[in-house]
Length: 318
Image 1 (tube, rainbow, N blue to C red):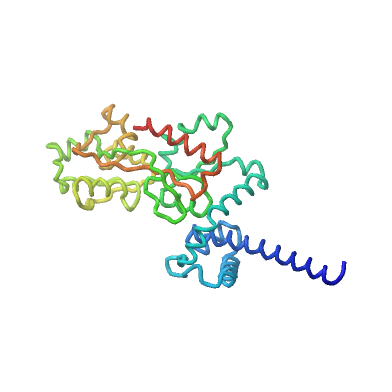
Image 2: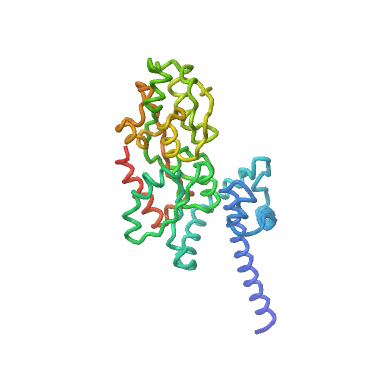
């Protein structure tokens, strides 16, 4: 091999190495684009935050223009960054799927990580997926509050989330799953003691006599009910915050206070007389559940199968 041939070979090798480096930079770019954060992208990729910063800077130099604006709210894509993400999204998804199929261990390849609130996992999700689990699907459940689970979805730690709130995040696709009717409930004893004449639909102030038993500090279900039925924010005393609706139900049944619960969760207690409804609005408030996945993730057959099974079973939830 003469000198010219060696130079030509070195050039081809250098060009191939540069393309591999650019591919790594693009992987990092998409991680920042989806998570909206250099720190979260680093956590997702298993590298340090300075590594992510350096790779994005290198890609910006190669691209010839900035791809993100660094703000107090995180990394916001520039118009050029948005165009680049749209151009490479499909190709990167296909490439990552191929890597998953051929290079990851079989155990990791089979496991699908799902997030839901504890009560949804117990009452809806796992019963709906029992057939797939019995057939060999490998599922890992995580429970928590929806906004925290959506963060973990965006960071890549979860594959699918059944969310009680509508996701409004870049890189996450949401499909409506089911509607839950919300009901204002109390124990029969508390209702008779505090509201012997009942509660009129417009008489929100009367409800301030009873403590509110909430699922979270932000009062998500209670606030939704109050806004729809009373056209205002709740102003009553918060007696307890319990991050499990089953525990909220138990506290209300023992006359700790009043709360707003999905009818499907408390239907047995209502039928048995352990709980009573304080109001029956003409148009009952509802809360929509959503199936959330990262954009392009449903190309994975296992995840798509679980997604479809949940949609099919949800038709009978109400």
